[in-house]
Image (cartoon, rainbow, N blue to C red; front, side, top):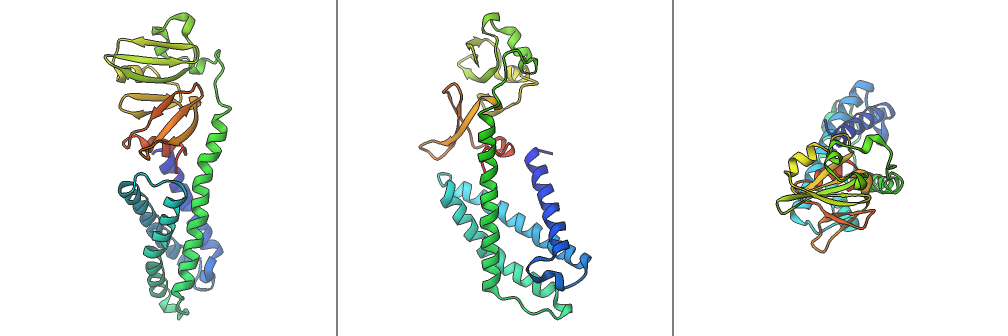
Length: 250
């Protein structure tokens, strides 16, 4: 399971169990723990499904939309689509307890408030990661960052690899102490990078995690990686998930 999926699963379980125990928004008064656990499990599962679907739709429909405006639209759409289900599910599930029918406006306000809080948390994780990457440049003597690919390079240039890319019929290996071209397939070069924390950002680009300084957006609204050495690496739509899995983008 990908790190991001595992993280999402753990968040789902923690939120569900915690909600069942604490019974927020008045649910504590409407049933025992098992009743609340079922209620919050269904509620959170639907909210997660709607939220992930909306994120996918907005990225496909408006790829240039980022930051505040995308999050604002997502929060508004989530409130619009999830609140009716929340009211229906609450009334139907707790009907046998003669619970008071919830007010749609108050529920919508609660949904929007929670969505905003989650949005803030989602953007806080990439910021924390960006701060961390400023200090993770590996020392030259660290054997952990000396992969098999370095054996093909000139001894005086062997140093932590920053990125690898396709250059015509060759592969360009950019290191901390310089760069060198190798006549080999890109897939073989990536295979020989085993042990180095990194990932593909494009069908012809690979980058080491410790080389990333920041994530920016280009003129076309696509994310791109800015490295410590000043290089800029593109990110294709197919490989954007690799950034999400590492918390680089929300």
